[in-house]
Image 1 (tube, rainbow over the protein chains, first blue to last red):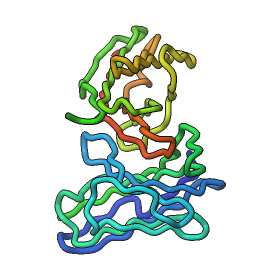
Image 2 (image 1 turned 60 degrees about the vertical axis):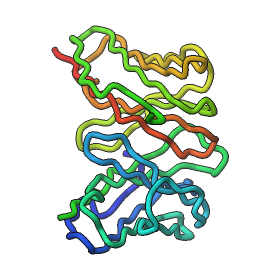
Image 3 (image 1 turned 180 degrees about the horizontal axis):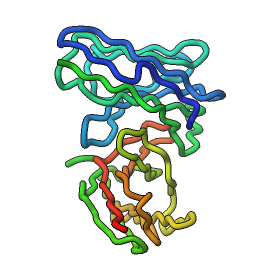
Image 4 (image 1 turned 120 degrees about the horizontal axis):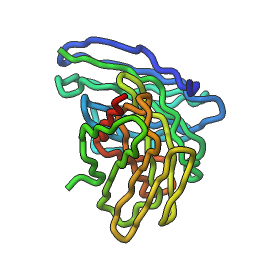
Length: 115
Length: 111
């Protein structure tokens, strides 16, 4: 186990609803990244937070937003859910903004189903 | 053109054989390259990474990088049924941890 915990593990929402996913990073890690993994696809980078600031964003609309807290835990919020948002959402923690060690520590993910 | 391309497979090899997994990338500015393994229903875990042209070996795994050809591969020697998983290739264009993943290759090792 990596020490990265995510909640909830599974959830079902309907179109138009809003969802909040949570992540606790591994001890000592100050950077959290969020990825979306659709079925049969590789993870896609959503955004990264470093010391509570957004540090880069992938090709996702503004209804995907996030936060990082002083303890380096993080939230991913998705508004106005669409069917295509159904996916596994992965949180990954690492250390340092410019000192990437080569390893992202992934949590087990939150599987979101949008009906 | 996708930034990172992999054959989705499945790649099927007999137990004890060498499995060869391939990946190409489009951005010549890519600096580091990673192979992750993902078991069904689980999160990705890092197998190994490589920065420099050539081979890097770690146990039964060898990563190979050819920046001129924009090609990276993973060889698994003495394949075991427990190696059956999806293998994700990822590239990091900067030194930031923002990885671009391929779609993954499913490997099946048959006893």
